[in-house]
Image (cartoon, rainbow, N blue to C red):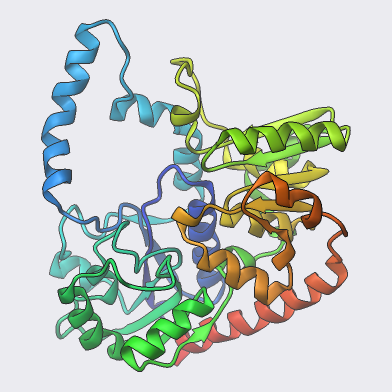
Length: 377
């Protein structure tokens, strides 16, 4: 009997370690449940006048800068810098260009699949994608199963949505066979705005264990580091720099590994031959760290999976609800800080991973059961 075909619609598989890790994990889990799975690699973006203008303007801008002897970050150079993560996707995630740059995919593309899985990550956040596509507005009379797994609004409200977005959501969300979200605020939004009951589940990255991640891309070939402060940072500020230096000195950590998917913004003098670390190098930081300093949701997730002492410097502009929900469920709310002055109180006591691991294990079992039930029903 042929396996049922599943397509996962998530955020673009680009320069985001956490985003790629969740895409990898969700596909791996669904494959292990006996399905033939592909993940959309590009996602459906909003087609705004600004994006259309940039599409026409940027090639001209690049050319002008090159004529001045400067080296702009063209798509070709960007691809070169991200070659390690591009190769990770090629090796580990079976992908498809589902939308092919359009709001509505072709009928041929649609009819390939028996099951559509929306999620995870912030697929219902207007700032990032065309949210109507993630309500599956392109499915007309195609008979298929519709599942939302750990979908996220990114915020604790939908104020950025248009009236049309709300209307489409009211029409199409009830047509999903099962809906689960990643944050408690998502449960509340679905209930209060649309009268829809949903389940709270773990981010896909937490469906796998530390041992699963230690099998990725020969990570054991990367020499271990000692007395390591691992910093995985999305947005670097002067206050974060101050705190990083304080942690390194206070804990007498001899080595520091600093990784950010935003190095072009952090270092304006980045060398032309700079290449971002591989997924295995990113993971090895969690493996080896004596302490992790992060401002990332997935930086927090992997600190927990690898049982590391850590602190998370939260950035409200990136959405707090996912942090708050995870910390509340796991019981680690004290590890959230908003400035360097809150650091000392946050680390007064060590994290008791004996208790945390029990909670994560139970939540993992429940989340896996929810996903399997939705796929098999």
